Length: 384
Image 1: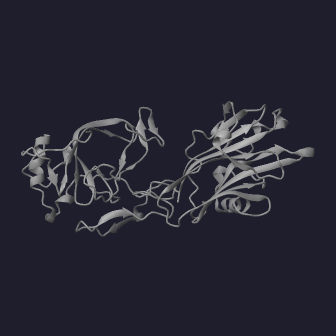
Image 2: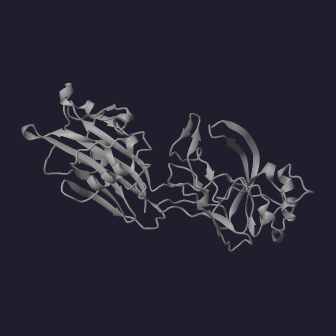
Image 3: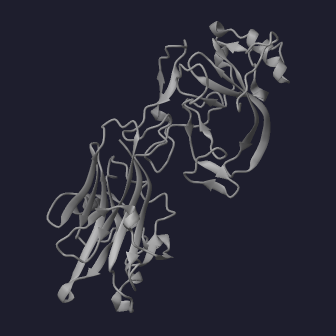
């Protein structure tokens, strides 16, 4: 109903390369600042023999100089003059291209949804009926597909990852991303680790917590499982509990990822790892001190990963920490986080932007009540 069929003069569905064609009406075009650029009257959704493609009305029928498509009724005449043997399918000005599909309809078409736009601008991670955009599977930059393969370099685009492949359905090659290990999706746009890590500090009184990370979608972005980015301390600053006889109990989480596993470690190392100082030596130290099995460190959670990931696995758990000197925490359900009163912290107090800024929230020497309990919640998607 949303994608009605196009009918020919004989009142039958218009077929194109053995599949029906569809009309998409009232499409919208936005720029990267979510500003409405134009309203497209309609677009044609058709099957080119291997992929479903979307062509907007202003670019339709480029192979036929004698036919001008101004209304939907002009489409059958244009398609009647289509000649795949002369490469007409490469004359399209594509808006979107799907992956290969053998389906007779565009239902469940394998397009990948990306970051959406809303009235307030870019909204991270929200997908729905009214808020999404499609990503071209073709990475060549042709056919109005201006998307390229994403790389590990802080979200940069990497044209060298775009490789030509022989097509079983076309004489010319198609272009697909040869993703770095751990990245998945037609354009490698799904990173090895996505999601949120949230920190709940119980201090001052029972069930009263200072919280950060609830709206931070970026704190695991650099956990790649590649190169030097295999260990992420969280928080960057160790958590300090008051132990017995004036002692201090230090705890710090380490999120570790390599080709074979994603793991969660708890360490008593007590070292601060500044966020802006992610040089090789600092990251090597984090891997050796926080993310490895040794005295003073315990691996409390682990899942296996494929060396060639193809999907995502959801991690939904929480780690409970306290001043127990013989325990390195335990895994609990996120529903067990016992914080009836919450106060939000600035994100830079949790992300390692400044030394000891997190401790200022609960430091007894600053007339604050020390930590009672801490929950660190993981709501992650890991490629596996």
